[in-house]
Image (cartoon, rainbow over all chains, first blue to last red):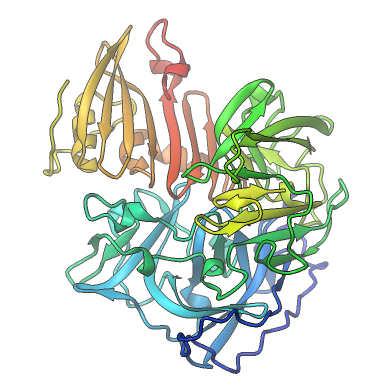
Amino acid sequence: MKRGLVAATVVLMVVSLAACGGGSGSASATTSAAPPPVNNVQPVIVDAGPLVNGQPVGDEDILFTTVTVCIPGTGTCQSIDHIAVDTGSTGLRILASQLTLSLPISTNATGPIGNCIQYADNTYQWGPVAKADVKMAGEVASAVPIQVVGAANFPDPPEDCTAGGTAAQTVSDLGANGILGVGLFRQDCGLACASTASPPAIYFSCPSSGCSITSVSLTEQLQNPVWMFPQDNNGLVIILPQIAASGAISVSGSMLFGIGTQSNNTLGSAQAQASDGFGNFTTTFNGTKYSSSFIDSGSNALFFLDSATTGLPDCSPRSEAPGFYCPASTTNFTAINSGPNPNGSATPVSVNIAFSIANAVSLSSLNSAFNNVGGENSGAFDWGLPFFYGRSVFIGIEGQSSAAGKGPYWAY
Amino acid sequence: MLSALFFLALSVFAALGGSEESVISDQAKLQASRKTVPQQGYRVHEISRGDGTLVKEYVSLEGKVFGVSWKGPTLPDLSQLLGSNFAEFQSSVHPHAGRRKATVVHNNNLMVESTGHTRAFQGRAYLKSLLPPGVTQEVVQ
């Protein structure tokens, strides 16, 4: 399945860059009238990823988009392609190596503010918080705190951030030029980091003497840019077409901003389920409940349980797909996702999910998109990008209201 | 039931597979409080931090750390918790499977399972060869 050796079939996508003119900013904050409707449709694509030395470096099943960032309040902008769309994190993170703008760095009383994001595979990204106007489709979020990953002339990551892990701060290591975290939450950390008592190791004060953990107000934390749009800001919906069981070279879809705010983003028959305060919900499989399950467009397969529990053999560590499942033949499963109804009704909402797992080694290395690749994730379901094919997946942002109720919720 | 705060880094020992004293260095490194919960055939040191991080270290009656688990808004220092097993863990991670969100290492002896995302990480590690008689991996949670 791995694509590393295949170069001939790469189609270089020429992504249309949003015009940077206008500058917008937030100059006229006095008006309270609803802004006129804008284009809320942001194109997204699953493809082989950004090129490094002419070779694509993306993993299979990574969803990308192009984001325009501007120096706040100006028309000085840059569009960056192959930003990974990640419903499993919050905030825009751009690799410093891909950023040509000099964005203003956020500071507190002692110096610049550093941000750290860690991942369960023991990798991390580190860099200063900077502010940018963030533009997608016709929407503009002004002066959004973002992370500039691996910025030069910034202190090394403190031990509390590295935690013995490995930096994923190059295009090759990340498989993307940045990450757009459009998950269930407004901020990457939230109240825990605003508390001065004992904030987690996410924000750091970085005077010249070195970086140390600090608290940061909610408004200065990394933000989900969607909730900062002046409109269409209660959530989003990611729509990808269904693909063949053999996969697809690339898949084009849409990310629509707002839920029920325009004629193209109504909930329709989608059923909404609230997540818990951590963004998790319960998946029931073979009668067992796994309460730390989540939906994550940033995961490049369906990662669930383990070989002993699923009966699916792991691919050989020496195969082309180590870490994935390799059943002799494609295997069908059903699971049930459930959670409270975000409209406050006492009756929980359950949805049956049918899915298949194919032999990851047998799938064609020519393709970038698969709806049937799986791997181990002990004790939980991580519904990765294969879950999104053939669905409209709504993400209700925390504290924001729609016809389904108040976020955080999923609907599909 | 001990409960104390340490801010001095004591000498660092390997945790998983190491001696019970290594729990103290983990506690110091985490700048956390600790309590000990006796169980049938082993004991559990629960190391908790004000930010919601909870690390549990499972120690046999002979004083060997046979398992560790973690839960919290960020990852604990796995090089500290896995000790001398950390290099094997790192070399066993499959960089393209579950990149970022899920890691499972099931080797002959070393088992590491790490999942989650910012605000909600959880994981566990244990050494099969060190499980005390009559104690199963299920206790490491």
